[in-house]
Structures are given as structure tokens and as C-alpha cells.
Image 1: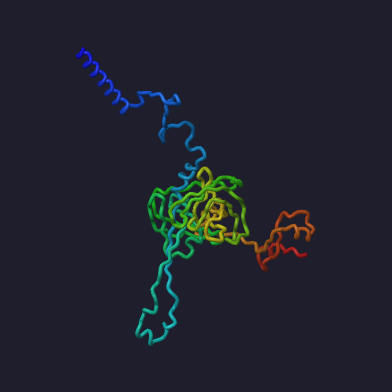
Image 2: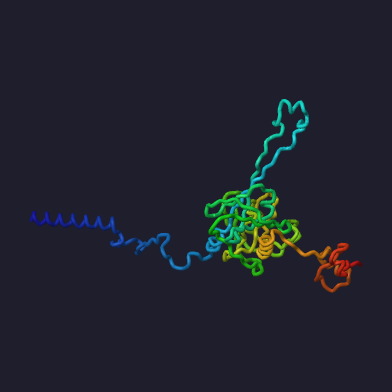
Length: 329
């Protein structure tokens, strides 16, 4: 009898040991009943959970466009105002050139878009307008000095060139196919914090009379555009370039949800002329034009407000030589 109990106790001990090892190392092999009568299965992140994980995401568009957006750093050397004692021989005898003061460097930043694998970069004219030195930092970490190919202050655009290989040029989209309410992404370097992507919609198209530049046909968006974003990319939901971020309406200097971008088709026309000739040439007819308002249409007994009123003609200009005269009441 004693031998039987010894064998029984050893068997129970071995079974409990095996159960302990299995429940510790392979708990999935043991199904223990729970109050709810089921087994909890935890799905780890990264497992195939069915459906598209990118539903509602714009990461494909962002990843497509971000490598082509660069940070632009500019420096300008300035000298202090001339000291009033500069011309006094007595003071110059004792202090010499110390009265001249030391020159200082001021730095500013902006953004740009690689538009050609040859190294061409589109940005705003005001970003590099007063720069003595321009450096470009790519999203992949490379940096290089940039030369100005040409600028067009009338549209606030400029073209730079860097000498680097294997540049990721952006694909141009069609701003004409954009509609109010379409999703867009603004990519740039706001406040120098690093490349940043913000999302919004097209709020309006064809914005003009803003006093930003001579030729205005802006895309308005509520995608956050802040100082440092100027010259960056506005892309559509597929990652194609539809605008160059240029300005914001703000009373504080930060984004208030009203930003303006130059349409990419206009930017492309300007860029191609600058690359080919170094400047932009435009036609001139020598007239002053004015929008036809309902009041003006009524005063001229016109049935519609369509068209443009010629308010003045430049003497000796092409329009006058062609026989065009200003409308007078």
C-alpha cells in the first residue's frame, strides 16, 4: 500500500510540473474557462487586421512630395550706420578704424521645391531677394550652396540651382482641376523647426487685388502656412505640385487659416522662361484697365458687367498706335 501511494504522489507531482511548464511557456495550448465563457485574443499592432490601414490617410501623397521640398537658408552682411565722428581727424587719430564698426550677418529662412533633376529649385523672390549667400538643405540630409538663375518680382518667384546628383524632382499637377473643398498639403520649414506637412482644403481660387505682387491669381487654402513656409510646396491628394506657398493673411505673424499659393502652371511658365533666358519677358499694350462694376455698366448703358473697362491709354504706346482709346462718359 505504501508503494502505491508513493507511485501516485510521484505521478501527481510530475503532472503538476508538466502543467506548470505548459501554462508558463505555451499558455495558448491551455484553454481555461472564464466568467464570460470565451477566450480573449489580443491582436498585436502590425498584424494584418483586414481592410486598408491607409484609409483616410494622405501619407502616400506626403511621402511622394516631401523629398522634393528643401529648406533654404540665406545670409546677408550688413554694416552699421556711419558714426558721426568718422570725419573728425582728431577722433580718427586716437580711435582709427574702430569708429567704422564691424559688419554683421543676418540670417533668414524659407523653403523651395526641386522642379528639375538638373538641380533647379523654385522658391519665392522675397525669400532670396536680399541674400548675399544661399544654402539649400535637402530632406535626405545633403546640403549645398545655391546660385540664383533668375527672379521675377512681378510674380514673386525665383529659380535657384544646386550642383547635386540624383535629385528627387516633384511632379507638376493641374491647378485648373482643383476645386473648392479639395484636400491639399502644405510642405515647408515653418519657423525653422524642420520639414513639416500641414493639411487643409482649397478655400478659394483666383484670389487677386491682395497687393502681394503685380500678377495675382492665388489659390487660397486653410492649410497652415507660417513664416518659413514661403517657397514651399502645395500639393494635391496625390502628391503632385499645384502651388508655391507665398503669403498668409495674419495680424499676429502666425497662421490664421488664410494662406495663398501661386498656381503651379503659372510658376512653371515663369520657371521655363527664367531657365531659358534668365528673365521673364511680357507683352505690353500700354493701357490702364479697370473691372466693370454694375455702377459703371449702368453709367455706360451696358447690359452686362462682362469685360474690362479701358480707363486710360499710355501716350505713344502700342494701344494708342493701334487706335484704341479710353472710354469717356
